[in-house]
Length: 290
Image (cartoon, rainbow, N blue to C red; front, side, top):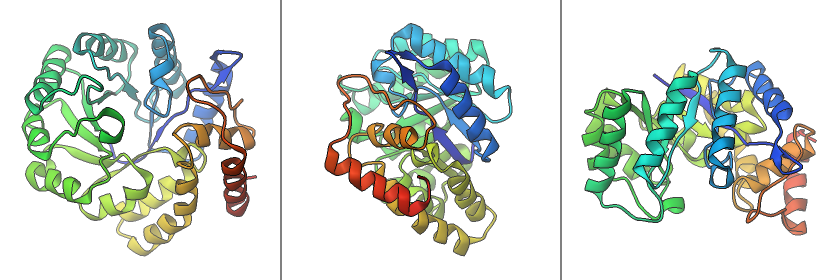
């Protein structure tokens, strides 16, 4: 259902509020550059500091701007199943194509708790759901055996796998076959994930170079492995720079340097240190972006 390069969009702010004009412009540029899909209000979209009203606003703006040109997978995760239900229902109501659901964070559910959480949301909404496993953020790992159980539910259609473990990705694909689409949740593992059977990436770096990330995924999926590999290594320093500090600090800073947005963050996220900012600028200059 979903494949290729899908951008985990930043949420631009200006004077403490969502910058709707910059956000719409960013979405238009992403589509012009050939991106395969968009994710509003994920981790990169600073979902953790958006109010519920802002969360809904950002999803609605994205869907309205895209107008069906590429799939929109709306961030809708929460550590409260009831809260997640409301966010999924809103995504469905405004016309998103699917909802992205991070594993519940902080309360550390068991594997059975994770299964029941997703099963409940799938059955209650009947809406396409994309699982999101990012243990480094949530302190819980959605294990391949649990993913295989969830893959039997027809509207659980994909997983964003950001454990960083190709062993885990391989186990998921081996257990699930074509019952679920595996997308890398980490730019560093996009190419290797496709090599073991994944279908693309939900990307941070594609916020600033959508064309190249889309080209890498297309080349791989079209069977041009050499071209995809070359693009992987071209993108590698840029991907590293996006994680000089906590995501999305570097990518918003980069978009600011490129003149795409005001690089405003919300506390507790804070502007980059001078040393890391200089490293970021050097990487962007070497890539020809500034």
